[in-house]
Image (cartoon, rainbow, N blue to C red):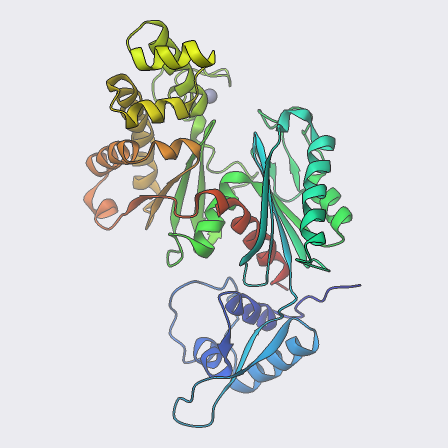
Length: 408
Ligand SMILES: [Zn+2]
């Protein structure tokens, strides 16, 4: 069975408007007429303005194509009641968020509401074949639960650099065996629908743009602090990927020439100071030197330490753990202050596993950025923690593929 796609930019613009929820024809006319004032989210096409007759003809055609359906009548605004429309209630996207140590799969409707979500541990280092087996198995489970009969598209995120144009990971440091693996094409063939692939940071940013703290913000940065550190850059409601897809790879910005050697070969990279790996190493050395009796006890019990141990120690008031988080937050803040001066974002979101270090981390990052950037850039700059946390990736993966399907 073939799924239909919009035939022109007008239809595509209406689908993107309806992705935010059902609307009456009168409301859609307000949003798309020549008299409409530009406001809120940008819909990604310069020529989405249309006359009332063009609007009605486009909506009728979208109903014929099975992409939109009538949704009763709207409240009267004084005259005849306007017919409401919504995206087809059978539209389904698959959202696949492959992490370093886990995989998340969700099915969403056309408005990207998560209808079902499964997550399980999965080591990306086992390579593409076993990981894809797990992914397809989880998608199959959601199908057995009756969540879909036909997918209109699949969005995928992976924890490494991606050539967006080719749909392949490129020399991903923590994904051995995945270099140039045709992931987008394979998923597309297996699931019988179009697919899109991006890195995990970009899909988290898209998730926050669609349903999180960045919902009303067109220009923002999302800094993900997980095992490593990366940054999603959203410009005018769209991900900025740069010429080759590596924009936002801030983990290897140098913060100190005389700093420790980073696995990338340079010295003093941000990631060599902060991120899940660096924090675990620093915590273990604090434990061995007996500077922190609490961390020493955890190390003796578990054999190794993680960023989460540091978070727990800090929450219990351990001064060494709190200092590790403050020092790391200060380094992130230094890099971020530079990015804020350069980019002048409307919002900065701190996300990822290490972001669960919470308010000590956030307070340190805020204090450095507010102190080091110019008042004009920070006067109206919220720096906040992610709202969606665990589902940012799948919502963003659905947003990624919906941007593709709802375009012409
Ligand atoms: Zn580096």
